[in-house]
Amino acid sequence: MTETQQAARSRTFTWTDPAETAAQVGGSTGLEMLQAMRDGLIPAPPILQLVGATGFEAEEGKVTVLMPAAEFHYNPLGSVHGGVIATLLDTAAGCTVHSTLPAGVGYTSLDLMTRFIKPVTIESGLLRCEGGIISRGRRTAVAESHLYDERGKLLAHATSTCLIFELPHA
Image 1 (cartoon, rainbow, N blue to C red):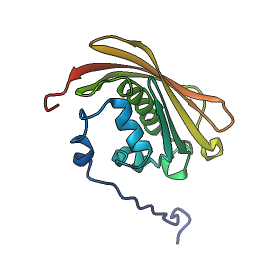
Image 2 (cartoon, rainbow, N blue to C red; image 1 turned 180 degrees about the horizontal axis):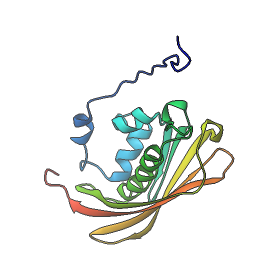
Image 3 (cartoon, rainbow, N blue to C red; image 1 turned 90 degrees about the horizontal axis):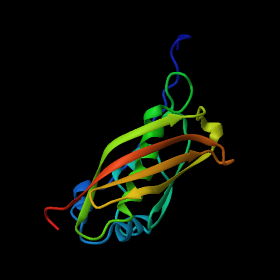
Image 4 (cartoon, one colour; image 1 turned 60 degrees about the vertical axis):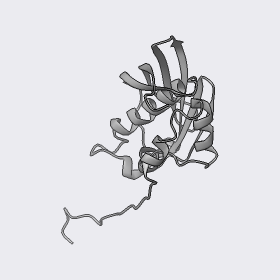
């Protein structure tokens, strides 16, 4: 091996067909669906499995996502890539909106405004991303999310606007 070559690492993960879970959207309230995911009754979406999320909590108007910072999240600068951080922030904010929706109603993100406060590294430990509702109307909702390291230090935060709509197949 030359000086510029490095030993390769590998990672394998599995996921369940997301169409199976998507087919269940609208058949129950958003909170019921999130709690079924939390309890392992329906699979988490593949993106959470891809980034290595280890769990989440859900109550109406509040969602917390947990993920240990890992080497495979790194960018070339030696810290967790901003896209991974944005994924956690978007998940917590969007799922928070989802937790307020009745059966037959869905949502989609319209925007995500993200602020990175401190670098995230494996030394950050178990990351905790908490989402909460700022405002919820009939057609839109605004949610926020905050990402903390395992010592409770704020690492990043975001605000998201979501469009709320009736599901066509519900």
